[in-house]
Each structure stands twice: as C-alpha cells, then as structure tokens.
Image (cartoon, rainbow, N blue to C red):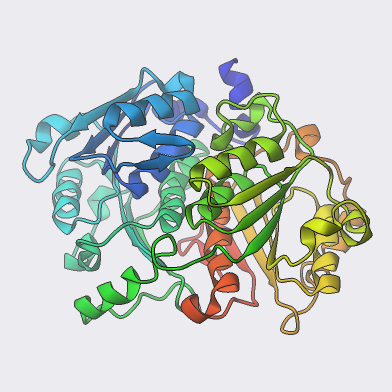
Length: 458
C-alpha cells in the first residue's frame, strides 16, 4: 500500500498540507478510552508520522479496542501500528506517573500535548508546563453523558483558573462514546492546522442530558453529580439487549457508530452496505485495518460480534439500499420490529429513501452526513416531527446530484468530522432507545463546524 493512496481522500482537501501534521511531535497523556479515541484518529491521519507520538500513562486500560484485546502498552502500540503501518516507527509508550516523574524529560521537545486523563492534578501540571514552555495543549475529560475540553493553541494568551483543570471528573470512569466525541474534537485541531485555518483558545462542553446539549451540568454538589452520571453508564447500568437497530451505510460514519453500539451491546444490529473496503478508506475507517477487498457490511458485522463479546447479533447485508426493496422486497424483513434506523450514507437519494421509509413504517430515524470541516445530524420521531425530506430537502437535493457511491466519487474526507458526527449519532441513539433514562430525543438538527468557536449549532 502506498502512503499517497492511503491518504488520498484527505490529500484531496483544498489546502491540505500532510507534511505539516506529519512532522509534529505529539504527547498523549493517559491510557483509557479518552486516549484510545484520540490516538486512533491521530494515527489514521498520519499525525507525527515523520515526527513522534509519545504515549505517557501510568497504566493502560485492559479492554477491547476495535477487535483487539489490549492489556499493556505494547498491545496498544501493536494495534495502532496495524491501523497505520506508516506510524509504527513513530509511536512510543512510556509507563510513567506524570505527577511523580520528571516532566522536563518526558514532555520536552513536544509541539502539542494532549491530556486525556480525568485527573485534575495531571491536567494542572501538564497545562502549566505547556504554557511555561510555549507548547500547544489540548485537555479534556469525559464521563457518561458529559465531557469538557479546553484547547490552548496560543499558550501566550492563555488564562487559567481552577475549573480549567476539570475537578468534577476526578475519580470518575471515562465513557467510550463521549471519548470518541472528545477525541475527535481534540484531533480536529490538527485537521484545522493542516489547512492553516486560524485557531484560537477555546473551551466547550457537551452535555447529553441538557436540552441545548452545550450547557454544563450542575457541579455544586460533586457527590450528587458523580452518582447521577455514574449510573448513566450505558455499558454497565443500562440493558440495550431488547433493541434492534438498522444501520444503512458502513463507511466512515458507520465505523464509530458500530463500535459504540457494540460497546453498549445492542441486541441486534443490521448493517446494509454494497461496497468493499479499499485502501483509500483507511485514513478514516479504522475498523477495516485488516479488511482490504472484503465487503464492508460483512466485515463490520463480524467485528461488532467480537467487540460486543458475542452479545450483539450483527447481520451484514451486502446490497444497495432502496425504498422499494425495504418496503416490499428483500430488505423488508430487516426493518420488521426495528426500533431505530440510522441513515449514514453518502448520497441524497439513499437519505431521501430512508426518510420516506421511516415515515411509512413509523420507525424513528437518525440521518447524518459529513464533509471535511462540517457535519450534520437530523432526527425523525413518528408523530412528533415531519418527514426529513421536508426539513432537510433530501429528495430535492437528490434530483440535483448524481446518486453515486462514495467509492466512485472520491470526495475529500477526513477521520475527524466522521468520528465527531458518528459519536453524536451514537449518543443521540441512547435517547431514542432509552428516553426514560437519557431524556427525550431532539427534534432539531445538530450541525458541527470545525472552525466555529462553539463548534456546534442546535
């Protein structure tokens, strides 16, 4: 595989300078979900390929990452090297406790530091070191349903207070789905950097339980806050086994969504996609690191079974989705008794068909799409919202464009916007499946802009 073929889709982005991100020396602090879903997009994009990615962690979480069992640092390095063989010589793991060790040795020479821990002391030490030494730093923490990130791209202009070190997360378990969202937001800064977009210091939160999604929760009573969010953990405290989800599209959006649905062990997941895995997919579809020339639907279904520990009945359907076949043809049985449809496709015709299907069958629908620097999610709730063809004008747009597959169009694409939107699809799916626990779903669309200060518009 050639480097240029692997990164073809991001090299097609106007103004993209691969060498700018390849030369960087990046330090990632932490060894839990936040670190994993920061490292996957970093490696997929080729950040540090000619420089270095330095992983600094006291210990590595023992868990399944993609379809691998990760127990120690060498396992993590081995998997990341398979996700992108070009990165194998650039990855370093240091088993250290930053609170105890000599920072000058482990952090010196870095261009960017990313602290992914839930430890306020680690964040305080790393942030103060970065500002003192004029190093860019990104710091974020997550718990179920809530996360917060602070990006200091211009250290000389940074202002800090105790809340900057995110004390509400101390001692809390990181959440995989929120980790995908905030890991994507962190690495999105490198996407902006690659095209020389102006970057500022920003801080933002994403709160699934709030109506506007962007308001911070009440943290005045830390003990109450920790208990409330601990029991929202979708993988430990909520049973998703009764639910059936149909996912149309197994590409760049389908990858993070499938990981999330496997993690919460949804009962049944039907994956519909006609395409095979190509080398040009690998810069953003990390589940397929070993699946070249295999059908995406079958390969992803197989990995979902492994990632869920065999608890999700994943079915791969290799065929092109159409409204006619879904209503009265060979696909109709897959939509019978479905609780949720996810339209994660790259053309308006398929989105329009999914919108009409959801209305006719009265099944909730989440529809999503991305471009390199933007993405959107729209929702259909039977009896509460209108057909998405009216709201989003999918059918109207389909008439103006050729309904061709992504593999034939070769549209510019990058991992970050897809990981961000995919994780939001997964988060909002929790509300559709378990509104009694996570609250009512949105009826308004969510839009992501990589270059806006607040990043989201709802």
